[in-house]
Length: 332
Image 1 (cartoon, rainbow, N blue to C red):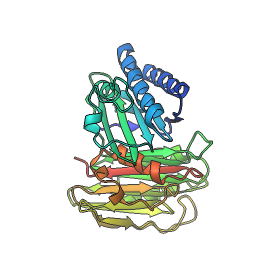
Image 2 (cartoon, one colour):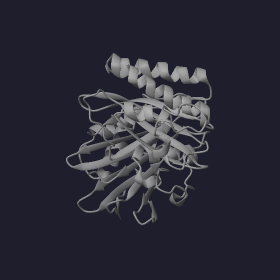
Image 3 (cartoon, rainbow, N blue to C red):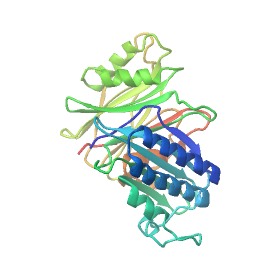
Image 4 (cartoon, helix red, strand yellow):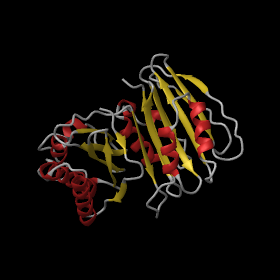
């Protein structure tokens, strides 16, 4: 199953008290009801939200949670991503067993989350905090991680981000977009990407440039993963950073040319990069600093793309700017 995030429909919560935890649980219940999950599944979703937020209140430092809808062509679900900079855990498998506790409680929190979830994944290290991603769908939906995932976070004090991301598969082309809108209109940019004619990244960027002529413009980049050729094709304008993390630990930056999509006649060029099995693509807006090192996150590149994106957003995102991280791997 390949799912999509509903653009800009998520909400970030700072979870530092019991009242904040209750607000998240109520919001999750409302969202589950709106998506038609059914009373029993909404009740199980409430358990997941309660346990995730309880862990943030008890153990976390700077704990936040993103609540957002996810969807396929014929189903909808709820995704919760809990992020903290707390003490972390040495062994998530052990910590997820019923009866394991570090605070003298019954120790059933993570076990309850994994039992109710349709899908989950996490990354944690002592001293580096924890990221836990959970999806709750209807019981008959089989959930699996998608090949690409992204997160956006608005500048402190705002509710909507000017950054956006999207993914699509059209005529066997697996493509992703990261866009940093100058002013308003990021959703329009995403919509233009999804409806753009099939073509290589440079062609898609040119289409987006023309479709944005009435806006303030944007920095943006489009990448295409070609599993058969073992290549990544990339075209970008402005300050969207792209990085390929090789399965051997190498790191290679991708070229975006100067310019603003929607303004004048920018030069658009496409570049090809090796992208072997096991490689990871990371794309980020300028609201994310480019000083992170994969060596600092042992085991992270083996986790689901959404967990990788959330971890990098936590550690490298700038609070005084909108921020976006997208992570993709070779589609299976």
